Amino acid sequence: MTDGRPALRLRQGPAATRVLGLGSTQPERVVTNHDLSKTMETTDQWIRDRVGIIERRFADKNESLPDMAVVAGQRALADAGLEPSDVDTVIVPNCTMPAPIPNAAAQVADRIGIKAAGAFDLNAACAGFCYGLGVASDLIRSGSAGRVLVIGAEKLTDVVDPVDRANAIIFADGAGAAVVGPSDEPGIGPVAWGSAGDLVDTIYMRDHKYIYQEGQAVFRWATTQIAPIALRALELAGLEPADVDVLVPHQANLRIVEAIAKRLRTKGAREDMVVADDIKHSGNTSSASIPMALDHMRAEGRAKRGDVVLAVGFGAGLSYAGQVIICP
Image (cartoon, rainbow, N blue to C red; front, side, top):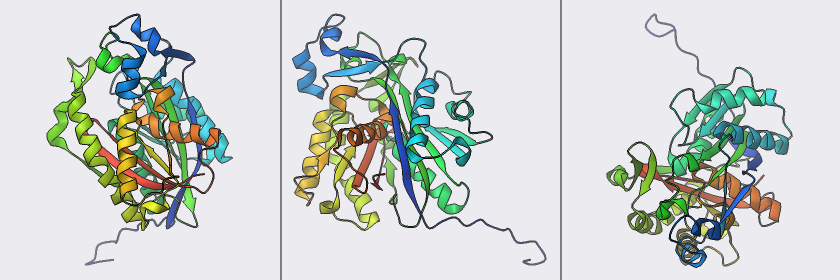
């Protein structure tokens, strides 16, 4: 007691966390650049030259964001060798739920079989997964959670004007998930995050219906400001650019991805550092893009267990976040 008042008791969690498993899903419908050229003034070469996308996946009308989140979450649990009862918290980063309430997380948790879970959505747009991973790690280390399922899920086709060639060629649908749990050794580094709220008008919902972005302004910002955030995440984790085996930036635009990788290599990153290019076949899936890209890279053998992964997300807000992850 202090001054006659009872003292609060605080919980203490483990010193470190790691990603225990990954999972992802995409809709079955593949939409090529040629398909888009039938509905708008564009060509396959025009799209490849500007954003690097060859094809993307669009969900059917009856396939919802929670539907995709459930599948990705189940696959991540299976990859981790865990049961739903082993998880007590679910976070669903997203920016495309049709309405603010009900949130996605509670219904996704229940459908997976995670009962009475702490459950909330997190909206940091394309930086959402990295924000969610940072929050999950800190919840566990504080003792507030045991294991956390983080699912980045988006149905961007609900908020994109289908004949707007500046945006319809970029965005797509999908979900990617990670199970975060305690670890004897650090497997998730400190998060480096922030925002540039003075640029909030460069990406927004026009008439509260369709997503709009000032493409050139966002491109200039991302190609100059995101590499320093990635370097800051390495510094916080006590690592050097040469330690990075796999770089997974948000899959916004292949030219942005390549510019970030180039900048990191000028700072010492290795030439054999593997760089995610999932955008070629998945498009921009916002908060789903980083976990989905890493899951695909593992399946392809381009990322393996124990690799040092540098993840960095960025998008509307303008929000950004990054951290080092040891690949599960």
